[in-house]
Image (cartoon, rainbow, N blue to C red; front, side, top):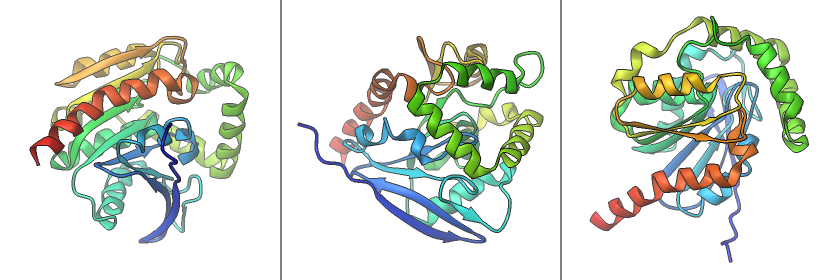
Length: 256
């Protein structure tokens, strides 16, 4: 029988922002970061499983979910805002999982603060340039929504409306205009890259390019999954995460 995992909702003031997050579990800290137009709800099929092995923190980024701010979200500041939030929680080294834009933020955090990341997981991450010659994001999103499970579709619509469609579009354009490739060599953490083979927003070719650019990374492609594999194929996704993270935690614990 699985343990009864209950997530506690918390809020913390950080400058002009009020950051909402959920936490549960015990062990080494594991932070989950959602993508553009999303919220902490995107991890609902994963967080409880992971909290059986880790102390899990599921954040709503500024301007998304239940987090609020007097200032607009700025992608270039997101990694350092994440660092400030982690500082307020008195966490030292963390494991990070980031999806899409959240993967970009997680990668930038790992590059800027390499000693603070134990292991890194990048899920269909918007890092390698994909705005020119690969995909028109709006068409990719339309195709994804057309085949999304109905429960996921409800969450996507509510979260996008809550964040604001025009604000989401503004941030999406910011992602397309900027390139994080030059920072990848600074990442020291062992990295697992997970990609849905049917992703039409950030195609799997970009996952392969990211894997080639990162030293010490491994790419796992989930079949019959699109841009949100943690929701579309949760069993396969969760097993990949546990295989990557749990053995390392048990080894570290045995040495303490």
